[in-house]
Image 1: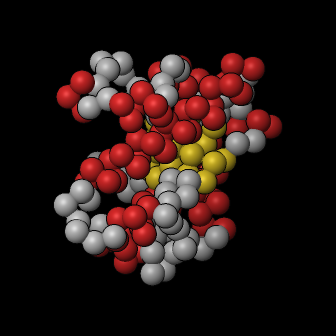
Image 2: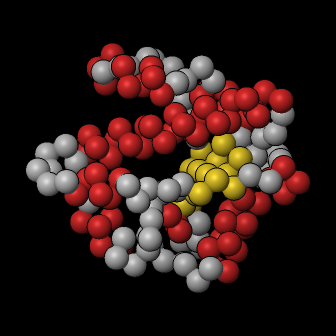
Length: 153
């Protein structure tokens, strides 16, 4: 939490950049629920990790959580991972935000495959489940690193 607190001295908020790359009547219905579910998962993990903090600090930090949703059917529908990486890297560079902070180093991608794994999820079900009783369904989004450091070997 110290790294996050320190970063918030420089940046006004924190969160993730989430790209939507699937556009259909079904995805129009499922996408908002998927975003709510992802946000609830992030919140749950954040507070679980900071449950021992006796201060009100976690609540103050969570209040600054804002994900950025990139959705533009003309630009992103069916876009490849490389196309999303190129867009994300250019967007980060255009804002002069390239550094090692998570929000500017990685983005999430919700494509058709990921969206189908999130189908049927709900924030209410997540809030009511205990971690040891979580469902066995595999649910995921794709996470893409920007500016990867590759070794020529």
